[in-house]
Image 1 (cartoon, rainbow over the protein chains, first blue to last red):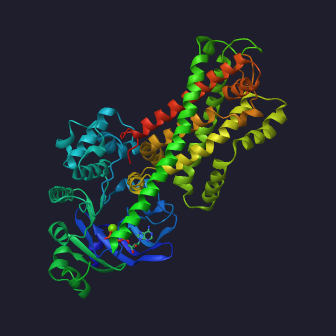
Image 2 (cartoon, rainbow over the protein chains, first blue to last red):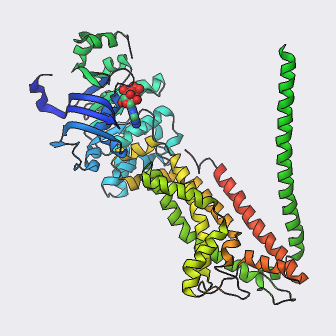
Image 3 (cartoon, chains in turn brown, purple):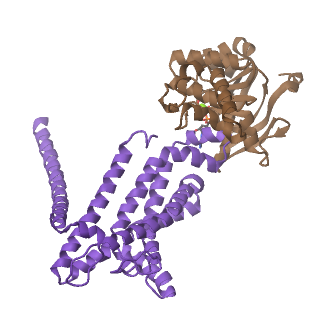
Amino acid sequence: MSSSDQADAVMEIKNLSFFYGDKQVLKSVSLSLFGNGITAIMGPSGCGKSTLLRTLNRIYDLYPEQRAQGQVFFGGENILDPDVDTAWLRRRVGMVFQKPTPFPMSIFDNVAYGLKLYEKMPSSVLAERVEKALRNAALWDEVKDQLRASGQSLSGGQQQRLCIARALAVEPEILLLDEPTSALDPVSTARIEDLIETLKKNYTIVMVTHNLQQAARISDYAAFLYMGQLIEFDAAKKLFESPSHPKTVDYLKGRFG
Amino acid sequence: MSSSRYKIRLFKDRLFSAFAVLSALIGLSFLLLILFQVCHEGLQALSFDTFTKTTPPPGEKGGLANAMVGSFLLSGLAMLLSVPLGVMAGVYLAEFGRNGKLAMVVAFLNDILLSAPSICFGLFVYEIIVLPTHGFSGYAGAVALAFIAIPVILQTTRDMLTLVPDPLREAASALGAPRWKVVFTVCFRVAKGGIMTGILLSFARIAGETAPLLFTALNNRFWNVSMAEPMPNLPMTIYQLALSPYPDWHELAWAGAMVITLTVLSINVLTRFLTRDPSVNRI
Ligand SMILES: Nc1ncnc2c1ncn2[C@@H]1O[C@H](COP(=O)(O)OP(=O)(O)OP(=O)(O)O)[C@@H](O)[C@H]1O
Ligand SMILES: [Mg+2]
């Protein structure tokens, strides 16, 4: 990427290294995330894709033996700085995991969970916000008559959209998706892909995927990670049509991964 | 060639199964015998008076009302002490300490406490409460019982929380929820069935304990609801009635034994029922 593009980067990752105990998993990764677009993160299994996502909202903080080095600039702050308020960060950087993780509570309460953390609001406003999030996640029509039913009673694809709705409800700026469709059937996958495409109008989306067709179909930017190193990062069209690094070529041809 | 070997194997297998079934039957039959005996004798002795009158003087008829109420108060206070402590310590081990040094040490000590003979707790409380306060009391008894319940509650809380999958914690944290909120609003919801079971089982356990009360709550023949006094309680009362030379007292002991056995039994059945309900203990 040329340096002029960096001006409108929503998030800038600089020389990011990551360690699980003594084991280094990311090696000086630098990359920028651009607004209102989908950045696909690709690479063979174990190359550090999930790890990269997990640094961007500092969720690795939960585990004392994990640590990150380098800088990640977002909203004028280096979010790796221990003084950064992680509640502030996580409100702005939402995350959806590979396997759906509905909380053991009603559909409504699942979506309201994040909202209640940050604001006290009258129940009518809360209901509106929940409805809006469910609509944004293309789930409203399917669940509007059973908002009190358990979130865990939904199908896998519905659960994943519930998790997306839950993340959207607090109106983040960036949405991190870690293989959001890998546990789902083709129909649910297509629905979620459509959903992600509509979401990019309002959100900066980073999506880890193993599915090259999926990445080619919906992403605007694409990054290729290999053994913890960023091999190539470019506009998706460019990376898929004329990759510049031989490793990327091999990966796209399916030689590994 | 293999058919003879196969037969030998089959024979061994059958022998082993038969042995296992036999052992189970022997164990079970003793249990049933005890239950039968207790109910048989207990039912004959049981009357309305058992629930309304207090422990009688030697040779007279009476009831166990004071002992039942006393036992209930002792166990109740013990639960009030042990549930918060046990649950919070379990939360610490499963959620915060995890594999830290302190957590390992606490978990190890807890294992020891779990298998410590209950009379030790009685002696310990005798030393730290009864002697300094110059008297047996309900408080001392409740503390001794609490010492027995805490390790059980701690262990189940920790085990149940450990079963909660990490992705669920991560998902709540990723929304910005602070650690304690994740535990109380998400993890507890998943684990509450199991934790309730632990609490009820520990209640059942302490309701029938005699040894820890021996040097702490002692016993009391009279009606008493003051925790500062020696406290009437069923296990000790049964023990004293049974050792007496009076047939009336023996009868009453059987009635008490039945009441206690059936109470403990029904708590156990209730917990089984609770844990079987799939909506309660869903993971
Ligand atoms: N909690 C952990 N402790 C130690 N090592 C870990 C841990 N989590 C991941 N790793 C290691 O870090 C490396 C990168 O893992 P990561 O999960 O980021 O890979 P990934 O690219 O997301 O792979 P996949 O496509 O299989 O999801 C792997 O070698 C993995 O074994
Ligand atoms: Mg991964």
